[in-house]
Amino acid sequence: MWRKGDLHLLRDMRHPLLEPRQAGLYRNIYAPSAVRVEGGWRLFYGAWDGIDVYFDWIYSVFTKDFIDFGARETILNNGVFMHVCNVNALALAEGGFEMMYTVYPDKHDRNKPAYFKSPDGITWNGRSAPYPADYKDIVKIDGYPDYEDADVNGMNVIFREGDKLRLYFNNFRKFGKVFRAESQDGKNFVYKGVALECNLVVNDVKRFEVNGGHCWLMGLHMNREGLWYSLSPDGDTFSPEQPLLTHAGPEDLYIVALGWVTDGNRVLGVLYGAGAVPELNRNRIFARWLQKRVVFTSEDGTVCEPAGAVGPNRQIIRIPEGVNPRGALQVFAENGTTPLGNPIPIKNAATAVLRLVD
Image (cartoon, rainbow, N blue to C red; front, side):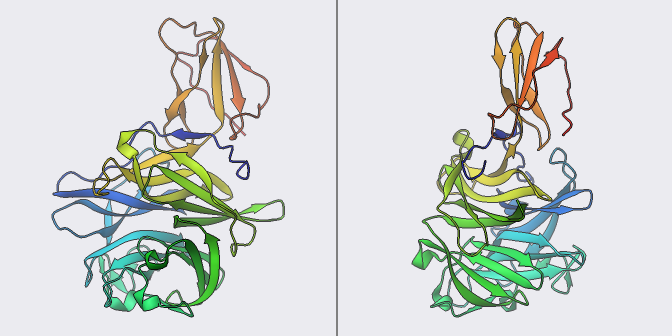
């Protein structure tokens, strides 16, 4: 399905899914990173989340289902920097979290990746939230040429394999490649080479078990109207990028970030930061959900497709006025074309609430 590019992605009907708070002067929310935790997900994101200072900070919010969201928390403020943003977060096996994020400026007036972790989601790098970012948090990449002059802005993705932490990154000053590095402590990395040659920015990488092996999934963007992805069997070298989605309307025309939403070995969908203006300063967080395709065919011959999704496990089919609500539902797989079973007779689709059980 992923290799063929046949993906039935439904737009969340809340478009956007998440907006910045309205109290403050600066409102620009993007750079999502969703981490599976007990009872739901903890969504980390970078933003001006309705604040009165012109600094990007890192925030988080809990959701059990991407339908309702809890109280928002400030995790990290800019500290000695002007901005901290573009977070990529992971859950630690022993509990807590680790993250890579972008800071600007370093002492060479460049963007750089920085690392911090928490044993409990409350204390970060040894201090209670909000943690003030510091120069000591910037990571080193031994063996990567001209790292001091590299501009690594919003392209700092991590993936943990036991004691080893992988880092995938780009460099705007030598653009056209996604690079990779490895570390034992999250701070001191060793350069390993090129993972993918493309003029796109890496924003998230996940790994899944498939047929006794692995499939790695990389998400990419370029501040334009679309998103892309790339696959790999080993996480070292990725295949040429493929289109994932394009914008749904003028409100998400400029897509600036993405984060996969996963549950165990499943991709549930993708969150992405986007806005309507090329200045990239009025962003919101939007969602597309990878769902089965459910089609209602009325006895009068009218075919009704899903209008959209509400979270990863719900979709809405609207029956227009005047259409006979009696008919049948056909369920297709997540590729949108493979039928799953026979059509299901429906007496009144206009009022039906149905649950599909795998």
